[in-house]
Length: 217
Image 1: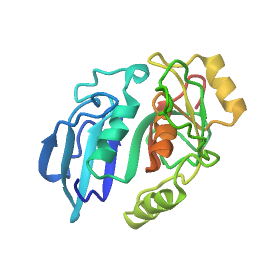
Image 2 (image 1 turned 180 degrees about the horizontal axis):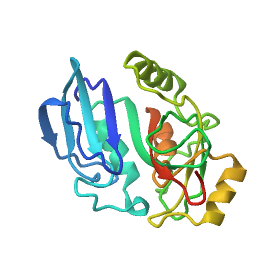
Image 3 (image 1 turned 180 degrees about the vertical axis):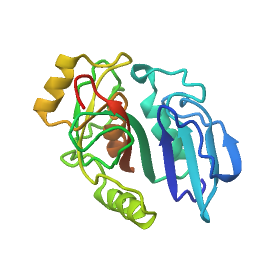
Image 4 (image 1 turned 60 degrees about the vertical axis):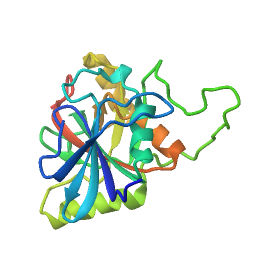
């Protein structure tokens, strides 16, 4: 295994980390099957960093068909213990308009039919993980500190609503999300965060607001 300081999962529009140097492409096979694509490992600011495109490098895998277990297991298998998820989202809350960066601290799962746990096979240990705070606070604080150090404006909290996709939400659905307390809406926040917790990975989300959700703004 490599000494990986951080693994980054890229969302829609983020299919590589241009800043990575001396990049090695690695095909990884896991007990859950193949991830969305090769894992790119390189150097960034003197640290070993891994990158995986969640939707595949040609955006060929829709949100509901992503093998989230394999993606996370692949990163863990190469030695990663910390995962920063980049999620392209729609804004709902007033402070979450287009081009805003946010590091949410809560989420609500509206997805269905996705493999959402490691506890699928007969004889597998049942994992009742604590998920009250779905993102790792220590990693969130590092993201917030990094944004401050580089002068990037960042909303340091918020609730991510994970919807099924791949279609966008109706105005009525977004109104429901707002009533439920969601500030952001995306399609890939779950089961990724829950699986990361089951695997024992530190996990945080950096959300990039692409547009207002339907009926907002």
